[in-house]
Length: 351
Image 1: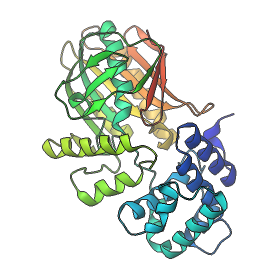
Image 2 (image 1 turned 180 degrees about the horizontal axis):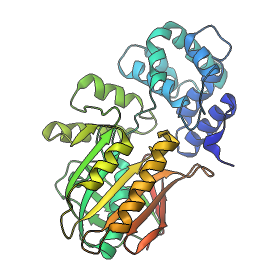
Image 3 (image 1 turned 135 degrees about the vertical axis):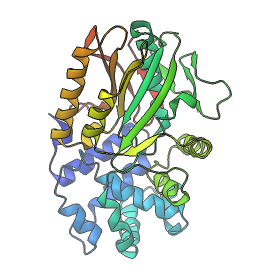
Image 4 (image 1 turned 90 degrees about the horizontal axis):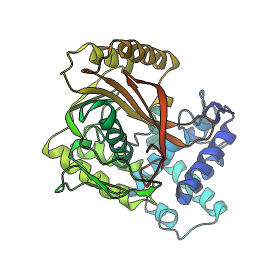
């Protein structure tokens, strides 16, 4: 069964809540379950949930209002939610009641949070990307040009500036304020040289990390159970203020096609990468990107290779899988590992 294809609202929301529980976020799960109690109620938010036109899991609909509620709390506008976020209230009926009261009091303010999918740009996911580059280095060479699709705020576009400890394998600048050290499961990735010569990204609605209000909104999407994510976000904001990531506002398929026509430096592998974004793209956009990559792959050479690296949701298991294809020689998708949705752990079996 394709979990992301679930159309029933209640089933989809319960599925999202279970996913949160499996990813060590029981408080977030309880907030999602509380939204079910809004269905049939008088609020505009409740009506939005009840009549959602798409697939709730594919659209990450339950996490939209969840982000809005957390944003209210972080901004000091709804201190009542501390009872839930700080763990003093754990009874689901009590949580349902409190969330219902908060939504009723902030209905108009919360409703726009349904307009866009959650921007869960997470630097912890770059651990999987760096492991993938270490793996690729031994196959295509150590120099890479990165193209990030659905880059959001460009947190992973800046991955060249992070330090990594991946099962004991070190990579990146030692003096970086961003320390990426996931719980590593399985053998370490290969120790190999990696040089990122350039990195740029696109998004339909890129986020400016240097804007205080925008950064606060992004923090709303961080699950409250994960203080390490807040620390990484603060480090990302500081790095962006020093030197913002190279981001453009563009349609994903148009941007990929354009990037693939740009001159490519000899001895540098061009890498398209993306994380937890594929599900939000229309099928026609996915098809265009796939066709563009496979067509460009046929023209790739040993001197100018092409790679496609993704950390996306398996639509049957709801796990997040690191998959790489490269041309020439690695056209078939290679499943190198699985990872926590927000980088807490990486399970590596890529060798």
